[in-house]
Length: 245
Image (cartoon, rainbow, N blue to C red; front, side, top):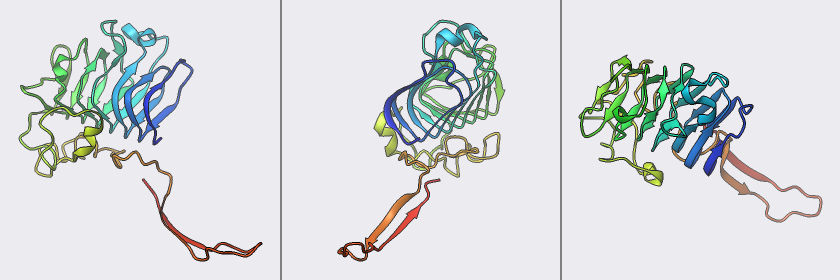
């Protein structure tokens, strides 16, 4: 929690029950094992290890929730064209995704904003369920192509973000310059499957901030009442702190 780094890598399928939140990751999260929770992060790429999961390998069943993140590149198997990831126990929910979801099958993909990512060009996606997502692209970025299904997706809304939003995909630190909250006049407002806003501020774990502050209390005021104390005396201080939930 609250880490600014290049990469978080899992090297063993026994590395399970992993939670990653409020981090800024400039390269990738690399997943092996199962029962991962990835929420409230700003991330370049999320990769699943192809040697474990390629072509739906059931030797390492994968359970994961990817929720309320900004991902400025892809969510995918880390080796292109190796087959598919059986995502029957994967939920991709309430994210802003500026790339593509690639090589996923049977995955529940809901309440996301695909922002200049061209999700319809995602490679080897089949039997996924797309519901209540928003896409913004130069043309209609159809999600239910091929064997994929779903409903209530919104294409190229005239109003989306509170401040209008950028006119192109943003990466890295540029993401912090924008308000990614959905406007009350947008068709994405209160339009998620759970009745909240589509995107990172909806759902059960809305993005708390874009600063990466952890949930540890943060001191906001400190005053030293007696700067000089005798030997064995007491230093008297006053301080205030607040939670970062």
